[in-house]
Length: 494
Image (cartoon, rainbow, N blue to C red; front, side, top):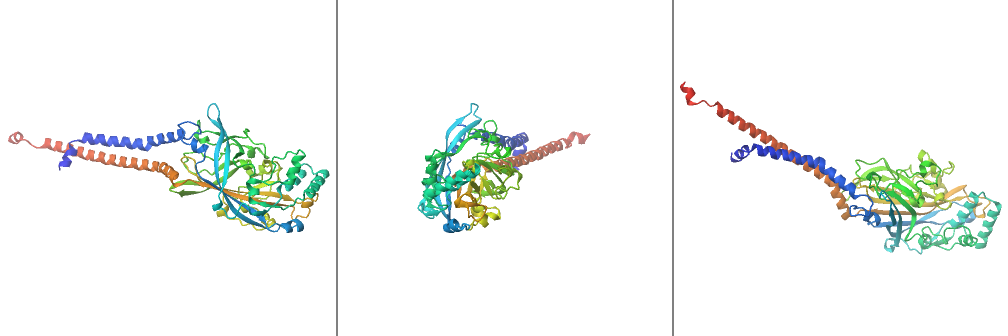
């Protein structure tokens, strides 16, 4: 009874407490999230100031990137060269490297809404994670030779040019399928007699050696990016504005494919997402074009929720209308392959997913030994929705070379098919948040739930206190009324 009397004597205090709790729950539920979102928006822009919490990590990627290279060794080179048989390939590797990325030559527009930069990539060999050695020998298609023949055909195919190339090939004893070490084919490069001869006579050959990544280690090799900083509109964070100082491309055969609108440079996606986008578009400088990744599923790693966007069978499918502007004069390659020759100085290069994943059946008929596997060869990005940052990335891509039958070229007269795509190399670059970084993101994701629970608890207590106040107030009122109704002795005497 003492506690009851204590509360019942202070109904105004209880009413004040309940109203204060209601106000606090309102602030917690409605105003605090607004303040947090405002803080996130202010911390994300790509500007070099103390207010940006992302700039340092954007400038120099803090996550360890592991890149694995796999090369295709042609196991029947003489059958291909002398008898026109389809090649049989054997995948060798992985040859594993750590990769670091750093933005350099950074410059901002006067209003800080745009930033331009180059991305310096550096690779270091990891022998303990490698299956094989950089001294492993690889039989491969002679890319400089095939590129020379392809260029002559593209220029109109004069007899003099064909004759000259055939004579140079004979004089230099060049083979259609030579062999070189893995190290030479990756970063070291090798001296090629056709390249040497072409440079000697003044032809504009961009390299003095051939290697898939020759001259790229420790350099900017995928162009100059111009992106929005997100300062004036956080939804435009990392959205492409220009590439190599051009606000649209001129490489492809349609405005849609040349447009940079709605494409990210792949470091961020728009933050504060209520749900997954239907797809995202990322720009890949090495192939001079964007790739569209549709939403696949929601994943949780280290307690952090993310939306996975993954390459699908529509990526290089030319029944999809939006892909047809990547076809030269409407002449499309087989599904599963992307012509990137405009990006590679006119060389007959093509990109695909590893082992022609999702590719047309004709690709496997013309090259034997390929085994596409979605788990091994998938390409995806996991995007955390609050900050718009990648939490896990696996970029998988294959480089191929188009080889065409041509009666004017001695090396190409007896080929078994009119055209075929030779797989040369594929790589997988992967990275993900570690536990320490994930814990910070996990806390941010949990903050909304914590605030909602806190607001609900406060509101519940406020309602309970308010109800108790009403009960006590009515009890007190009833007691007062009862006191006034008790008859006095004077009234009885009368």
